Image (cartoon, rainbow, N blue to C red):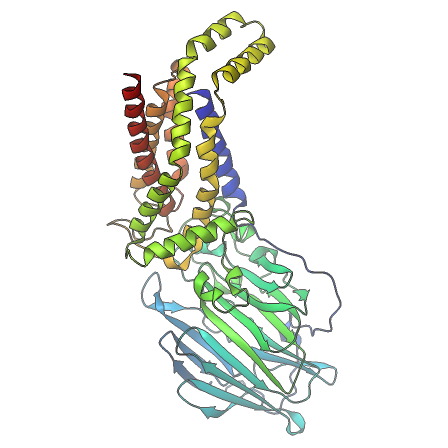
Length: 538
């Protein structure tokens, strides 16, 4: 391995370390400060309802269900809320299907402000007014004969739920999702890193990690709010104002201190311990409260489902920004890669083969760079005797040696940094793939072969990282045989692949598969170029 390749490998290591520390840090956009008259919904236990139909301590909830091709929802007359929400297309890591609402929690509750007072209606007893196959309507009778009517209407074609409200004269109306989300993945410590409250305004996306959320609650005043929600690694519960004018949003967490691992949400792998430790859902519980200017009728669209980029984009409100796609400058690359992967996925049922095909495509795109780099390596090998002569001649004069070396490079048409070029160009693709393979719902649980049951998780037996290290060694041998620089450089040819193999042990197996495949295709290209050069020389 020559000096330029050694520097390139060191650059990869530095970037990987930085990536593991800072990847998926919250991309928080701070909205302009403003005063809004939002009720204090962060301490709901202090709100005192004065509603005629209050919940007796011994009351038994009356449950109703609605089932569509996509979801199975359970409603309670206590608060007119959703108490279970099962996604029929997604399996839980153990048995059964994904269920998003933690046990004992009630979501989509009402908070109102009238006569200068705030009332939390979460514990009030609603009655069913109407019921059909895809909708359920609740009614709550308030003091002085006032009524609040809320209706849920489900779609048979996607995960959207229309929430319609008929309200009396109010000062403010708030729709709340404060039941949090349930863990859905095997490694809860890893999943915890992705718990966050999210929103989208005309000013851009807002993402606040669990550890950054205030226990007392923090307000986001906005009259340009497009949507607000909370998410875990793969799923989102969001509220989209449809026929409603948002005044502001309040976000909070319910635990005074987040569980271990929350400090790096939604950061890199190195910030939380791995393992099977079970986390109390209450410790990861978040709440969002959307304050709306009250009208006689309001409408919201609820999206409670997968973080599917293409599906979320179809709503045309920027809901796709809930999907993590990497750093700001990486996002365009991530979107392009996701498009290509999804396109290939239409024709290939195995996403492991899709990753290999994508690596083949990238190797073809980068072939001119690989060819140029190989020619540079050959020129570097040709001037090695002259370089050694200069080193011997000016060994006591480093400045003169540097000047003469650069002059030799210039006259020979050699760029000493060209060896880094392929790797530098690869890094944005590497980062984008990391983001996609970590969080894209389409690759959740995507199998490849035998032991590889989930390309978004590390290889449990380390087969791919070891093979990747071997191919990296072979690639360096092919590239370095023309420009050997002594025993120390030969040792680096052995040590660097081993060191990088250990780094790749904890990365998603999908990205290791990509790197392995790319190495194999590059080795084939280098072998071809080497034979081509030799035939020209002969």
